[in-house]
Amino acid sequence: MKSNGRSRRLRVAVGSESLLSSAGGSLLLATADLVGLPRLLRQALVPWRSGRARHDPGKVVLDLATAIALGGDCLADVAVVRSQPDLFGQVASDPTVSRLIATLAQDAPAALAAIRTARAAARARVWELAPVSAPEGWLVIDLDATLVDAHSEKEGAQPTFKRGFGHAPLLAFADHGQGGTGECLAGLLRPGKANANNAADHITVLTDALAQLPEDLRGRVVVRGDSGAGTHDFVSHITSLGLRYSVGLAGWPTILDGLANVPRQAWKAALDPDGFPREGAQVAELTRYVPTTTGRRQWPADMRIIARRERPHPGAQLRITDTDGWRITIFATNQPGRIADLEVQHRLRARAEDRIRQLKDTGLRNLPLQGFAQNQIWLELVALASDLLAWTQHLALTGTPARTWEPKRLRFRLLNIAGRIIRTGRRDWLHLPRGWPHNQILLAAHDRLTALAA
Image (tube, rainbow, N blue to C red):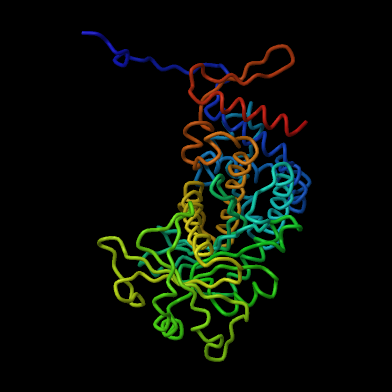
């Protein structure tokens, strides 16, 4: 019998070499240094640094974000970063980290504003080095909420509409299109019973998201959301800013009446994302059949209402607003263009679900702290960690398959590979394992960051 080499007994020992378990994390550090993130965080968090402090608050925040980007989901996971000082430098102890989060939570609005200021400045630098492409110069911002389960009596945790228990943060993402990922621009932590149609919450998150954009892009934004964003107050707010929108609408009686009055010939073939007719799906414009006034409220004069109908897949449960066996989806927009193209763009709002899943793979699976303000700080750290991953992909990994890898795959193949730091002469070298299939991607990424810094 031939041995396949896997049956050998291994003996385990601890060596003294400079081995690293997260050698790929050097890519995150190089990206952060390129855009000036350490300096920006240090400057923004100066008010929280005491005169005798050994560890700078900005460095602690960056270390926490790095630990989350590498897969951590609680404050104690910063130990993974602390155990590799040759790569990440000196990292604060667990008590120091906990005290800083508690201190920031005491004045959470000011602390959040400081971190967001640093994120916005770093983002402007990222987009200066590698501009974000947007259709016809318009950037799409997706708004969507999610549920984060809580397994203990945390502050603000409440029963949710899905019969769970936890929180319902509202999030905003910049959509980088099919060839990219996206960036988490803003997040608002809310109790589990938060109303999905709360216009004030949507206005707050949109305001925070716009503040993250370079000034020259803030006036060229398409706000995209589900029916939770399709309220009079929020649509009026978007219109007052001079922005465009594409938001879902609920099946109100006036809309259902308009849907019933649409002639058969008004329905046109819907398209798939590649521009080809989508089998079994049709679109029609309802604008002329729906009154602009609903009760005491009036919709903007330039609002268009578009409906899409499609035969549901086998086993799908129809909703009360679905008619004649058709699954009906209705949205409103103020954008010009063919209704079939606008419907495709609105349907791509589903990318927000991918972004939320990626956030939950990057520290948002649960909120690890007890206080509501502390968990809002944690949500901001998750957004910062997500930024680190997205900026690394946008700057260093463009042109490679890793540009669109989700965080789990990115860690498994690049960030969490082992390496060894070798000191020779007056230079430090990070040696990667010979034969690792993704070495060339990592080497090319470092070369690309070096070229951008030149």
